[in-house]
Structures are given as C-alpha cells and as structure tokens.
Amino acid sequence: MDKNKTIEKLNECLRHEWTGVAQYAQAGFVVAGLWREVYSDMFFDSAKESFGHAKLVGEKIVAMGGIPTVERNPVKQTQDLSELLNFAMEFESKAVKLYTEALGLAAGDRALEVFLENILEEEQEGVDELTRILRDPKAVSASLGASKVG
Ligand SMILES: [Fe+2]
Image 1 (cartoon, protein in one colour):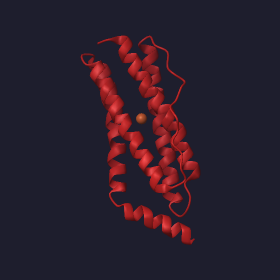
Image 2: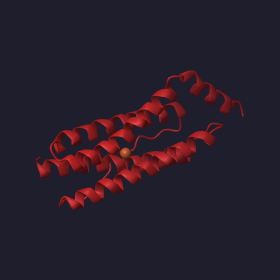
Image 3: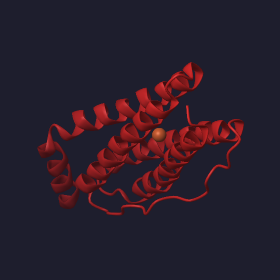
C-alpha cells in the first residue's frame, strides 16, 4: 500500500464530505412547500452523516501521519426539490466512487479496508434510497405542484 497516495485519496474523500455538510445543510434550509416537512429533516440527516464520515476520515488521516484538509468543493445550489434530490444522488454516487477508489489503494491493509467498507456501505445506502425516491418522478413533481397551490 502506498501510504501517501492513500492519504491523498482519503483527503479527497474528506473534501467531498465537507462539501456534503454545506450542500445538504443548505438544501435543508431552502427546501420549501408541503414536502419541506419530509425533506428538510432528510437533508439535515444527510449533512450529519457527512459530518460523521468527515470525522472518521479526518481521524484516520491523522493516525496515518497526514494532515486533514479543511477545503471543500463548490456546493451545488437550487431551491427546486427535484434538482435538490438529483444533486443529492450525484453527491452520493461520487462518494461511492471515491471510497471505492480509496479501497483499491488500501488493498492489503485489512483494517483500513474494513474501515472504508463500512463507510462505503452507508454511501451505497444513500444511492439506493435516492434511487427509490427518484423512481417516481411524478410524485416529486406532484408534490411541487401541490405546494404551489398552497
Ligand atoms: Fe459520506
């Protein structure tokens, strides 16, 4: 295992998690209409999950001798619920990709593999849940229509 390359990749994961903290909190703030009752909490829970992953990864980077990044990527912003959900799907899919890449670099270090697998499983659950939500785009657009009526 190339330790420096692995730390670099873990920092890429951390940067993505910091992005998630800001992006999901923003989504929780701005989501409007009747469905705000459902999605605001969901987005804030996702922000908390990102912070939880950031904490795990930051601690691991230090344990490996690295410095955890404080940078994040640009946040995708919108007030449209459909777009918020699609941005969330993009975010979770990228997280799956990044942790899968990190796992590739960690090959051979069983403890680090298990550590990354546990996070990867949660990222994939995010993708799966959004897939189930977005399977019915009519439900999302209907809710937007309903919220406009009110
Ligand atoms: Fe995460």
